[in-house]
Length: 358
Image (cartoon, rainbow, N blue to C red; front, side, top):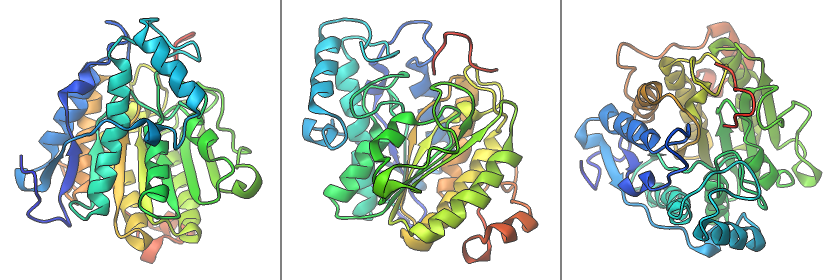
C-alpha cells in the first residue's frame, strides 16, 4: 500500500493501526476488536494499491478532546479507565486499562484523516477506528463511546482549519445523540440522521430540530423497525439534499454506522452493502457541490463482522468512485430525484435485545 497517491482525485485515505484492537470491552461484547479487523479488511480489499493511501493516526491531544468535551468529563473518564473500573460511571461503556489511549487514538485518527484531506493529500478518507463515538455527549460517555470522534473532527475543522460550515451525516441504526447534543445550538454544523425509532438511546424524534441559533440545523429522520433502502433513500433525497443545498457545507463528515444493515444483532433496519454504496454516492454529490469533494467517513456501529466487512468494502469503493463489485450501485428513482431537487439534477449512486445497548 502506498503512502502517497498517484491520483489524489480518486485515492482514498485509510486510517489503519493495529492498536485499535487494544480496547477490550469483554470477550462477548458486541463492540469487540474483531470489528476493527473486519472494517480494515473491507477497506483494504476495496481498493487497488494505487488508490489506497495509508494515513498514520496520531493520538488526539487533550486540547483537541476539549474542543467538544467538558474538562471535568475528560478527567473523570481518564481516571475511571486508568483505575481499572471496567466501565464508565456515566453510561453503558465497558472499558479496559488500554481504553483511554485507544480512545485518544480513535479521535486523533479522524483528525489525521481530516488534515490529510485539507492538505489535498487525498480527497476522501475512511477511518475504521474504535471505540466509536456518536453517543458521547460533551459531559457523558455512553453507548460504547468514550469521546465523540466526529464531533471533535468538526470542531477541529472550524477552529484549526478555519472552515465555517460542516455537515455531519449519520446513518447508524442508533441515533447519534452525543453528536446532536454537541451542536444543538450551532447553526454552522448541520447534523442529519436516519435511524431506527423508537430504539436506543431513545432520542432522535423528528421534532428535535436544534435549539436557539441552531434551530433547524438538526434534521432527524426516524424510521420504524423493518425499514429499508426505500425509506432511507427517501430521507436523503427529500430532507438531506435540499438542506445541504441551503447550507452549502465546506466539508462533510459521515458517522458510518453499518448496524443499519439487515441482520445486524443490534438493529432492525434492512440496508444492504449495495445500499451503502448508493448512499455514499449521494454524500459525494453533496460534497462535490460546495465542499470540494471533501469527505471523511468514520466507523460507528456494525456488529456482524462478515456483513461489516462487505458493507465497508462497498462504501470505500464508492468513496473512490469505483463501481459496486457486482455492478453499478442502484440509482435512485428518477421521479424521486426530481422531487428532491437533487444537486445538478442528478444523485449519486434483529432488533435491539432487551437491556442491550449498541
